[in-house]
Image 1: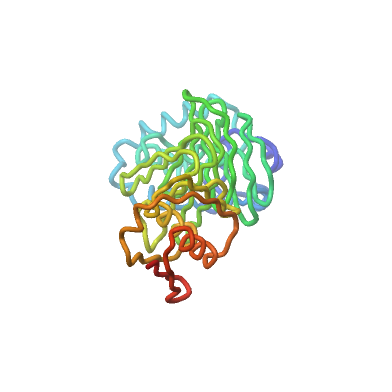
Image 2 (image 1 turned 30 degrees about the horizontal axis):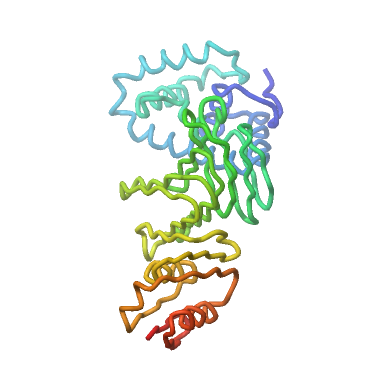
Length: 325
């Protein structure tokens, strides 16, 4: 039977059967042309094909180890494929070669061939764009940002993955939390408005909560933290540990609000938001309360204002370092 056009739905079994034939150079001319066209319809398709190629390489490398279980694994695969009509004709002389590898995949990876389907996004958004997801949540993606929505979203899960910068407005559901994957870090949400900037190349991550509550989990370091209104979390390659600041009403506008907040806490927030260092020569100043609002002021103006409020002097020692005295 002729394969369907690349934009049409195809059962997972038939799709991976065809991709396996393509990677093993067993596809005929029509099948090869179909896969070539399919790769161009979505950037995620090429990523899926690359992942499958790696899996096949692994399976081939481990074939001797799992050979004893191959017949059983293939019987499982056959039962699964019998549930749906196959769309790809199988040439008998090549059937054994690539179906044996498919069976090996079932043994090597336990959950089987089908784990790839779970990693293939249900939907992809590229910024700049505002997207409304099936659960009613909205996402504003900045330029050069990408959001992938997991298969089964809103039915079996509310999982997405993000690269770049996005502002989320998420509807709450304690039974089905909204989960954002950022490499090896996750953000779990119960209902809130927040901003995320994640750059994989530098492992840079910023999470700012405008309202509500989120949990940020670092699986590598087995660390987690809960952020609430006005809190900011940051980390990067140079400083991989979570760094937390508060009193930030709008990260984009650098809006800060302090109400009788000790100077020590104020300076912690300012150094994180403006990426500067402030040395306090008179430590008695650190306990003094600060009542001030800042929106978009320069670093020089913020330090100057604090010094005037506290009846203190200040000195700029370099572009990113100050002294209060």
